[in-house]
Length: 227
View 1 (cartoon, rainbow, N blue to C red):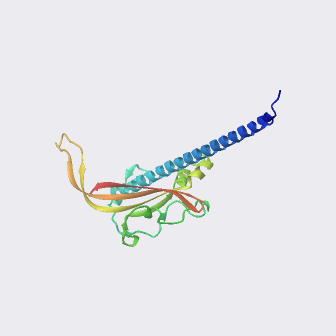
View 2: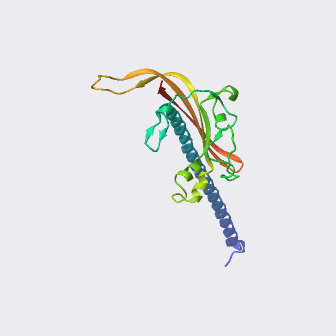
View 3: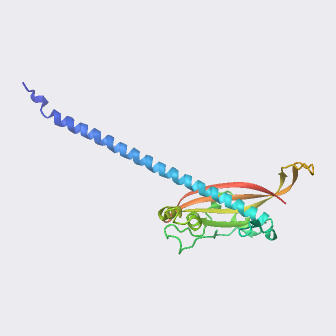
């Protein structure tokens, strides 16, 4: 004998189960999308961090090239005639000097106009009172395109990397103790100490897309060179 009170129960149960499964499916989609977005953000930060490290390395290389003389590719030697220790003789420019990009070679969405984005990432003096050795802005993707070329790296990947920029500026901190290590049997010489000059390098990795600077990673280092 069929109980009239149970009529339609299977339909109601099916609707309830369908609703629960829909909610669970929607929740999984939201969680998955959130994880995907978080992973993308983490990857972007990591890439920007690597670009910021490049800024420090290039800034340190600039000081070393000034101190030791620029490297001559043809004879694989330093040009000692151009050797000099850089000094803080230039006031901080209101805009970074663009070195390898311009509005024609860059997409209008990714083009980074001259700015003091990197400068504002540090707690330093006011620009008008601040003296620097150099202040430069470079596009990371253009460097790879010029050095490696699209034959090695797909053009689509290079275009992605053109969203990343690095900027650095350098100040002369002042005198600092410098200690060179080494030994010589002939001269019976050991470690020697002398006065040196310290330089602080400020470097930034910047990711820009369309009209917005999405991410900035700021790093700094100090190097000491003998006088």
